[in-house]
Length: 195
Image (cartoon, rainbow, N blue to C red; front, side, top):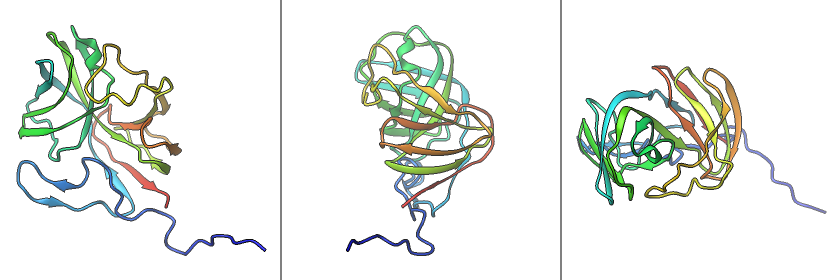
């Protein structure tokens, strides 16, 4: 005789999932943002025109209105020249000074130039996910196991597109090597996590 776990109606999707940057204390207003219900709406999108200053321990980003409000939100960049390793890495925001300035730990040095584009990133937690990608986001995976970077490496990790914008996805994640990247214009992506 064996035991089998039976599902309970109404419990297929995780309630109030912990997604870095989606819940917590708003760094600019002090208001607490509750975790989302069992369906997450991502309306973030890419923003062009960032300026990045590197000092070997911290990166300071200035952007007219970066739209990040909660410490722990993740971003990546594209279009940077000079210090190209700033591109494609997943950076976790450690401080939000104002609506136009934020910081994150970074050991890279040098002058960052080019037309720098900020792209919000959400690392998919461990488990299985159903996503309806809008025109604002793609799903990427990291096949070279260098996603664990905390403060930057000389060569950016390899990220490959798994699902393009405006598609549906059923994706498994180990909690580190799969991410949702908001690399396009205004739209809404919805996302639910299986229990």
